[in-house]
Image (cartoon, rainbow, N blue to C red; front, top):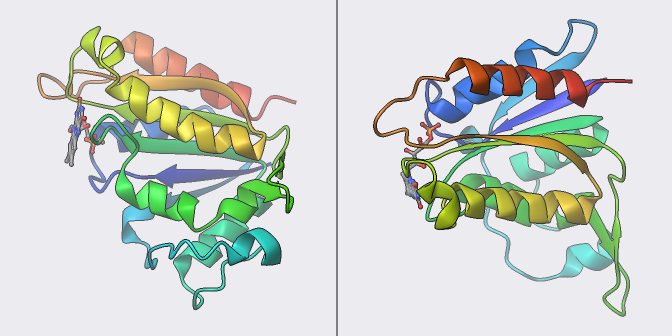
Length: 192
Ligand SMILES: Cc1cc2nc3c(=O)[nH]c(=O)nc-3n(C[C@H](O)[C@H](O)[C@H](O)COP(=O)(O)O)c2cc1C
C-alpha cells in the first residue's frame, strides 16, 4: 500500500511530527511511505474561481499543490498531522486542501457532491497547548480535528482514529498510552 503522510507543522521536531512518526512506526516495511512537509511546499492561494469543479483540475499555474494533489489521489491511505491553530487546522494544510477540492470530491451542476477517495483509510493527529480537558471542552484540538475530518469525509475516507497531544506548553513528551494508540492506528491503517 502507498501511505502518504502530510505534516502540517512547521516544527520538524515538534509534537505533531513526533506523533506522525509514531503512527508510521508500526506500518511494516512492505508498504511504501512518503512524508510531505506541507510548510515547505510552494503553493499559490486558491482564487475561488470554482473552475476546478467543472474541469476537475486547478487551473492555476503548475505548483506543488498540483504535485501533492496527485500524490493524494495515488495514495491508498493518508496520515494527516496538523498543529491546532486558532482552534482549527493550520493554514498551509488548509491551503493544500483548498487547492485540491476535485481530488477529494466531485460536484454536479446542481451542487450534489460525490466522494472521490471512497473507502481509503486515514488517521489524523494534532497537538495544542491547551491542556486536557479544555482542549476538548473549548473546541481547541477538537476544532482542528473537526476541520480535517470535514475534508476527509467529503473525500469518502474512513477515519480509523485520531491522536491528540494536548498541553504541549507544559510537556511535549509522548506518553506510553499515546504511543500505543498511535502505533495501533498505524497498524489499522494498512490492515488487509
Ligand atoms: C498561530 C498559532 C495558533 C495557535 N492556536 C492555538 C489554539 O487555538 N489552541 C491551542 O491550544 N494552541 C494553539 N497554538 C499552539 C500550538 O497548537 C502548539 O504549540 C502545538 O504544540 C504545535 O504543534 P507542533 O509542536 O507540532 O508544531 C497555536 C500556535 C500558533 C503558532
